[in-house]
Length: 289
Image (cartoon, rainbow, N blue to C red; front, top):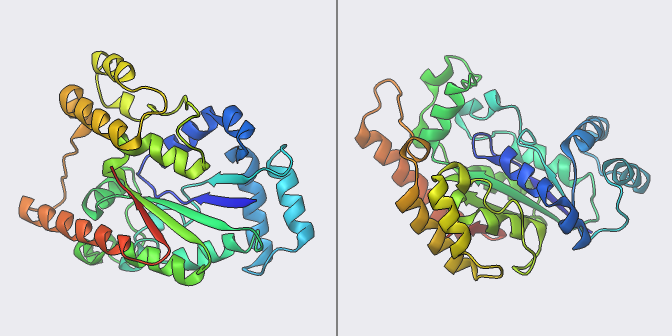
């Protein structure tokens, strides 16, 4: 059995992705993949993490966890989604890092099922919009001087991923950009669930349908056929977003003190280079259109 942890991140539609997977819980279960219900597993896993303190779980503890988080017997994989696995949102940028305790947190998760192959999934977004969104939701970084000491130009998702890989060298890490999520949503779902294109997913359009108008959504559903190759699906979704996208849903205005457009462009360029760096890291996969 393979263990999948979706780590978030915050402000990247991670909860919506969890809901999309849960919508398809029945078909996925028949295909051998269990999507654990958050209300059922979060308390159980949290208590186990606190009790173990980073030590590997015994066979008895693992059996207890599985019995309490699912009803299925011996699935091929089980998915746990929790955007707080790496910490609470107001600690997401503490110590001028993106999830400074990512290595420690994922090491603890890895030890819950130490003998099972494990994979981590993480969605990212530009530090410029990540910081803006965290603050707009009341989650300003918890550090002395708050955002005054935070230099977004020094933030690197690759450092976060590298710390996960160092802490869990036998676990793979799959990442994608939140900016690409509307186009690759179904691809992410299938990759996380370990299924091919033959199984139709009810949650495949859960994100894109919030971004385009009703006419565009009708056209999109007609244009995409079951089993269509991912590249063709991505191309069609991108075209519909361009033609039918709702500007107020697609465009985010960044309003940070003293941030010029040139500075925002600089942050985006750093982010793009960081994604390319992650694509070259051993044990790391980047899902892209």
